[in-house]
Image (cartoon, rainbow, N blue to C red; front, top):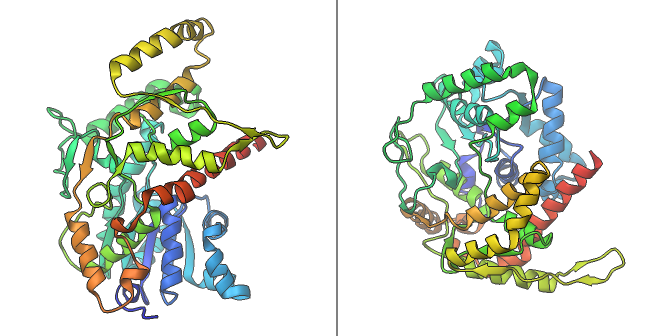
Length: 429
């Protein structure tokens, strides 16, 4: 098997990766080590009080993941030696200047790094506003400041989710935002004003108290939205009705394809000054309608029905769906008006459930957007034309995805398993 092209680009390179304990971060670390074991060093910046704690966190949350079983089997008894040679855990945080590292450490790092991959972000839309702003905004400022100090830097890759486009509808093009321009019309964005607002609210709340009021207040701007909410809610039978247009296209892409595109982009833009944006997306080349998601959901639970403690099959009821808002509203008023009154009388004990359902409904009512993927198509065309194995090793062509098979056999069971694991952790905590 040839390993030229993309994989060769990472040979003898030193890479700083932020967000390595996250979903994409783990995938990237594993992929680099698997396709290019001759990478010089991967510096993983993780939140930890010291180097020992940082290493423990990487070994537990990254390397200890089942994702690394292929490498674990390949290297056998030498696996941990290989990991120790290739990975260095840095205790730091993007929310601090120089990541909170000592001057000597930041100087040493700046002299070694060839590539920076920034994946550090909070994707929880119920996150405290000050935490989200510090990580997703000022964190990038700190990373750029560090990048300017690097002597041998050839590439900075920044990763964002689709929500960086906000609530825009229609065609979203692969072009950068203008500094100071807000996503909402007639608004101007002033980061300094945002930071001052956060400081003001913190001061009023007494930021050192870690009170419930503080947490609730700082979270008010959040909405967590993911299609997995629907799968998990249906599994738990907590989603009796829904409104959606089955013809609406949902933009979904497997994580491994995102990683492949990231590595291909690093190779393509190596040591270039141009700022290029790639939308790793499926909506143009292989659109996934919501009707197919619904069909795949029922198909999965037909093949994998829930069972009770005594082993008996539990039949899931189908979700009552509405394609017009007026019908949905009428149903909700008739069925749940008394429950709302009871919630008020009981002091709002069901309010959290309401917001969770609201996030689930909201995702399928605000996805009327298509992400242009012109740059991604060009990147894939160049990758596929190379005279090596890049097209098979680094496939990110969405046209090859069989959505029904992927949802039923991969995505839905993974979402259910993750949710069950989280519930088990919560119960044992």
